[in-house]
Length: 275
Image (cartoon, rainbow, N blue to C red; front, top):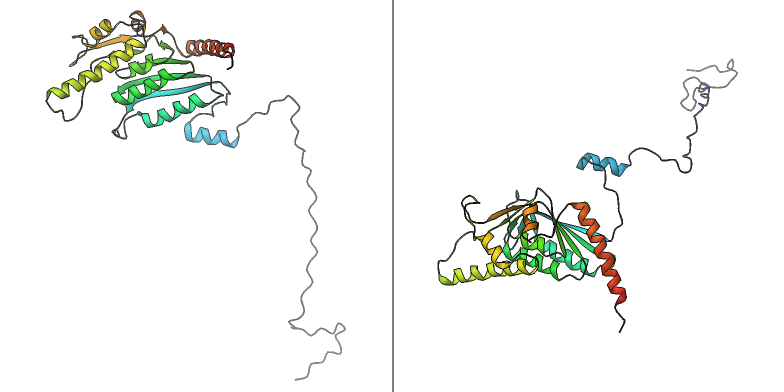
């Protein structure tokens, strides 16, 4: 079949796949005017939360704590002091294997001049508590303890191990003999070991506080004050009156006292002649 293309001036064969229809012209959109962002003036505070702040509010329910450069390091001893045996996961614990390396590092850190110990503990492992107390007492830097809530049982030696101790007016401290949990072999050696361990606690407390040994033992074996047990509960001012704690006060008093002790400690260091 012959196709007559003589009458088509363009010379384009209809249906040719190599040809395309011309695209319609698109008018460009007019440019929109955007108001320039105002730069914060010098000294003007920019309000709002950063991404880190929002994450902290979402996860912890609070904004991040302000970063404060201080020469005082705060250690908290809360819950039950965990020793050689791992306590159940629902117990709030302070692990002695975590505390000891921190105390050693604080003794070596030149930027740390003083240590603040905050206690709210029910006691715990005797040897672990004594180990923590011995390290605190042997440190060369000044230290101050504050008993908030409670400093019971083996928490008493930890509280008095610092250079100076405070107790909140409503805080309490329980003094009682050492008790054993689990299987106890009923032989004279078991009693002797228990008695020697108790003497270690009594000797440490009396050496690092103003309470006489006779008074401390009398409080330890007092009857009628604790249910199903013997011992004494001291609240706030009572612990100060018998010489166990140095003063009644809170965090503000403790920080002020520690700053004064740091100044005195640095002054004595400067007065020591170089050899």
